[in-house]
Length: 207
Image (cartoon, rainbow, N blue to C red):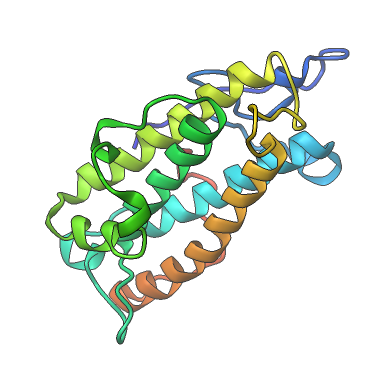
């Protein structure tokens, strides 16, 4: 994973919704800001919460080899490798397909997601290279940031494509998805190598 040194200017008067949204300038990941964390508006709070969940999930999956990514607990089919693929797909479906009406990443096309939703990620990840799985998730996250950046430059959380869910609803759904699955990742990572912790260390880079 790359290391970033982007800084966020919090001193500009009346910035736009886009520049006020941490991490949603295309190609620039978020920089931690304690003031936004404690007193941010609705948009800032939503985006920062999503980014915190993404970063914690990434931390649980990094530095894990193929055996660790395929580890299962009991009768559950869930694996860290499958979670990387599943959450990449969720990013793509929420922000590329549902929000922007764009094609999914090539890896997700020509798959009958409606009929295979419960099994595809876990089954297909079994044969995938660990670095390829992590790269797939990172690419999906970067695409999500870029799509949201473009949309937030023109609109806000109330935006909704015709007949679709609002941006507020889609962000909330993805936060819920990460919150659920980061809990799974907690258990799987601890079972693999004993690693525990609520959040990544400061030096862990933003994906």
